[in-house]
Image (cartoon, rainbow, N blue to C red; front, side):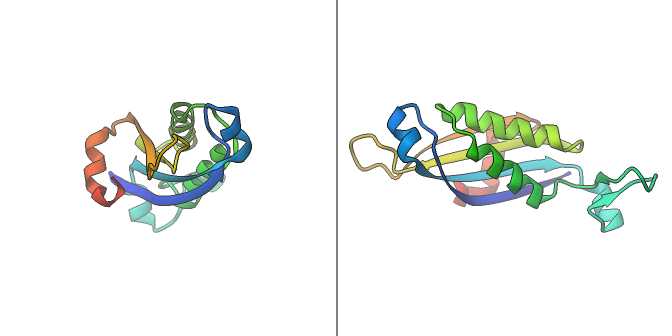
Length: 141
């Protein structure tokens, strides 16, 4: 098993409970950790491999694909960050057969709260991941 991480993905998006947030938008920073079986990737040194040439399955969780999944989900507005992080985690789990768990943290920069706040954030985990994995990347948190 291995952890594949994408840290500090920046997106401008239209998420928020209030109508104004969905109109004006805000900047978000997304961090994703994926617990994945990399045994086949390490053995073959290939992103896709299979016993049958027609059956090319991913040997790992390609971080380019993870990024594109996150980008796609960030484009779809949500009122609650809880909805959005759950959607991202579920999409990553659904896309890859060899993912054992996912951790997603989403930060909303300078949330409109009437005072200076650097960010608000939400973290969710699925599968074999739990919040203790976040300590691997203290800089993330």
